[in-house]
Image 1 (cartoon, helix red, strand yellow):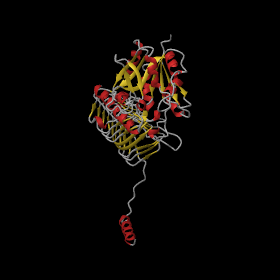
Image 2 (cartoon, rainbow, N blue to C red):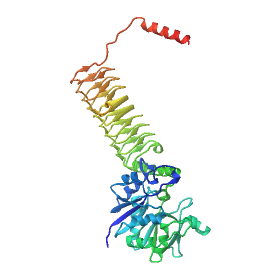
Image 3 (cartoon, rainbow, N blue to C red):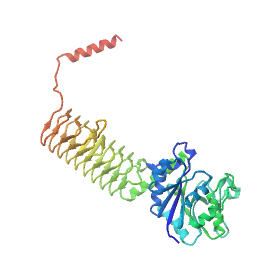
Image 4 (cartoon, rainbow, N blue to C red):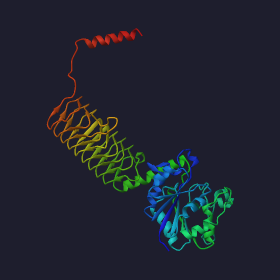
Length: 442
C-alpha cells in the first residue's frame, strides 16, 4: 500500500454570510487569501494537495496553483465535497481539511496524522470552545471512544450539552474513505451529505480517535466578525513569534505583521507599523511609528520612519535613514545615505553616504515606461530637486535646490536646473492691492 498522504481541502463554499462576491476561501487574512495559510501548513506535512472548488472559481484555482483542483458541480454537503476530492485518489491516506480553518498549525495537523498512524481507523480533530454554539458534537461511549458526530441541528438537548465539538478535519485510508462516503445518505435536517456521518460507520469497524486542539486554532470562519477575530488571533501568534525571536515591539497590539515577515535580533518596531508580504528586517534596524513596509529589505542599523513607506523592490542598506513622509519604490538606498523629508524615490540606485534633500523626487514614469535614476556616492541632492529619469548623477556631485535635472551630472559638479530669479520692483505690492480691491468688490 502507498504511504502517500494527500490533503483534500474543501473550498467550494461561497460563504454567503460574508456578503461578498468572493468565495469564502479567498477572503483576506493576514494579507493573504484565507486558503493560502492552510496550504502553507499542509505542504509541510503531506505529499500532495487537492483542492475542491465550485464551478466558476477560476481565481481560486489560480490562487492554489500549482496544486491540483477538482470541481464540485453540485453543492450537496460536506460529504459530497469530500467524495469529489477523494474520488481522484487511488491509494494512500487522505486528510480532509476545510478552507475556513486557516489557523491550523503544523504541530496539530501532524498530531492528527500520527493518531491515525497509531492504529486508529479514523482520526479527527475536536475542540472545547468557550461557547459551543452550532458546532457538531463529538459523542463518545462509556469507554471514552468516539462513537459518532451529531450536527447541532440534528442534536437532542442532551447532545447539545456535550462540550467536545467537531473541528471538521479527519484522516483515514483512501480506500476506507471511499467506502464510507459511498454509504452516507442525506437523511437529516439539511438534506445534505454530511462528512461527519462517516464517523459512526468507522466506529463500527474499529477505533476512532479525537485529537483535541484549541479554539483559537480550530475555530471556523463563516462571517466578517469571525474573520476579524481570526485576524486578531493570527496577529497575536505572529507578534509572539517576533518577541521570541528577539525583537522589541513597543506596542504589540498596534503592530500588523505578515506570516512571512523575517525579523532578526534587536529589531525595534514602534507603534502603528504595518508590515506586508516579503519584508526582511535585519539586526538592529528601527522601524519608527506609522510606517508601512512591503516587499523590502531593511539592513543592519537602518532607521525607517516615522510615517515612511517602503514599497516592493526596496533595499535600505546599513545605517541608512528614511524619514517622515518619504516613499521608496524599487530603490536601493546605499550605506549611510539619507532621505529624511517629504521625498519620493522610485526605480533609483543611490550610493553610499549621499543625502537626498526635502521634497526631492525621481520622475521615473513617462506614462508608458519606467526609467532608472542613478545617484552615486557622497552626493548632495538639494531640496526640491526633480530628477527626470533616465538620469545619472555621479559621485560627489550636487544639485542646487529647486533644480530640474535632465542631463548627466559629472562627478564633483554642481548642477543648476532652474530659471534665473528676477525681481520686479513694487509689482508685488501692486498685485496684492489689485487682488484685495477685486475681493472687496465681490
